[in-house]
Amino acid sequence: MSGSNQSYDAEKANTGYNGPALRHTISTDTQPAFPVYHRKLGNPAPLGLFGFASTTLILSLYNAGARGITTPNAVLGMALGVGGLCQLLAGMWEFAAGNTFGATAFSMYGGFWLSFGCIYWPGSGILDAYKGAAASQLPSALGIYLITWMIITFLLFLATFRSSVALCGVFFFLIFTFMMLAIGEFIESAACHKAGGILGCITAMIAFYTGSAGLYSPDASYFILPVGDLPKRRDD
Image 1 (tube, rainbow, N blue to C red):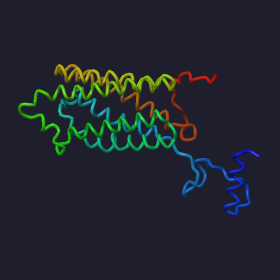
Image 2: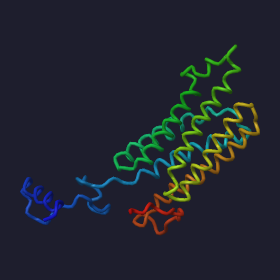
Image 3: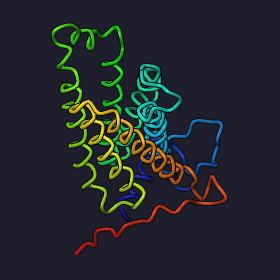
Image 4: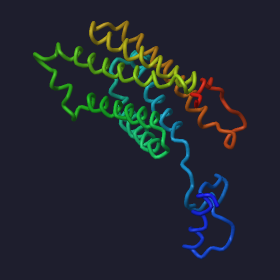
């Protein structure tokens, strides 16, 4: 008798149940209105990608100068509630699902949006610390902040080569988004900020597409979106 059958027999012995062996994974259409034990986790990736994409799109439109907007503070609600909280939750659920890359990426970018929100939140006093004589230090401080996130993004990008073209595209364009925004801070260039905003919009669109591909599964949609699966590792 296999180990899995032994666990089922033990389960029946403990509960007094004499019917067929109980399954640990139950389909999504089984008892939809009632709690079911041993139900497998859903896919948290669409939540994380949509949280990232929506917040990135708003900030990138601001950086690109859409409608003449130059002050990004209106994005704070999205940064804290959606980009930060939703991605952090998605990252924790990816840990539970055993996806190390997804857990790391979503948790890190959830932290990014929370930290970004804290920088521009008036109550934090972070920007106030750069008033007066320290005002000239702010662009360099923000540039170093953005360069750090560019490095983190590059390291994550290296881990996408066996995933999909769509996911690679998200991190590829995000690297250059951070790079252009960092350069814009270092040399105080509005053109670089605008370029970073445009690249960020492209990044957000690819992230929306990738998240939609995870959401439109065969059991939930009449169609699926191709993501360009890359070759997986072959076991020797």
